[in-house]
Length: 407
Image (cartoon, rainbow, N blue to C red; front, side):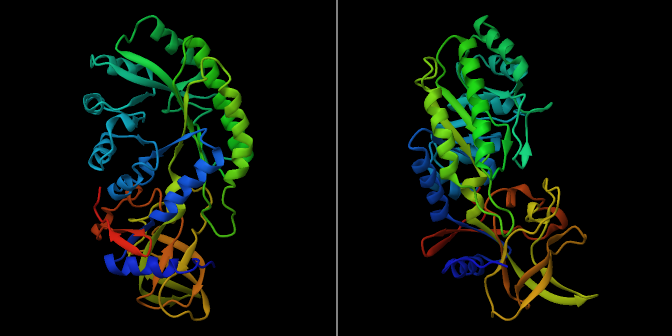
């Protein structure tokens, strides 16, 4: 059992009470502090791109303007959210393996800064639009280090052009296959959610070798290099967060060496970040509706569950189900008990936690599920069994804003 530091528990509870539960509560100050921590550790070597898929709330996207350098989009819907939040199109990068023709056309029409192309067929579809566009090739490396929670490369994948075929794609540019498209850089995102500085450093080294190879094959300078960071966050109590300074100590010399290459000296290097920025600074807050005791188990039945937070129920790639960090944030602090926390759905898989140690729970108490700022609301089946959708709130200092539906 852990507790939230200082007055944070009170602020989270107050915001959830005000907007109504179930609710997602995000701490803007915490998110911006993460951005500052990155910039300080890497000493300006990287720009920061925020991956909108992690949390696409419009108020959050608006607050990140001027604090991160660009947004990474994975759909036409995310493009429209970014535009509504006031982002300039030239600060947007559009990636993803399943871009439909109307999405390509819309991105081209508004002047998205860069299109990240994940196949030769996608390049053909872009060329068919007949508009000048800057593109990056996403490369699917042959090798991915151990120490990551999920791997998108090193195997057959929908993501990117396989490393063994990237030379042919670069040659096709030189041969004039896509005359309206300008190759300006390379994008690699091969693995995610690592807490191991050595694994992240090794992965950066693999990316750097690919960037050099692609630049030399192209025979002209590359202006944009996107490093899929893969920075992870703890998803259970007792796990230490990623030591970003340890990562920087290993990575900074590699970036400095990369910039010594004459074809990459002027390249803009970017870390694509999502989970690490917003994940630790969000909580999913549920209200206990009733507590029942049966067959040796205390069961807390809550007003939100799998339909609102699929990942916390262990149903989004978790191999061994483990409880997310959970905190009682309201009510009296009685003796500690062990609880199974379930949501409101008519299915046994709607389970937020098993044998969770919390101060004694009663009807009306609020429980905050930590590490929930990323891949929460929009990664969950909110329409299942037609319960009300969660509310959202943004903490700003000692105040909060209701940002429900700000999409």
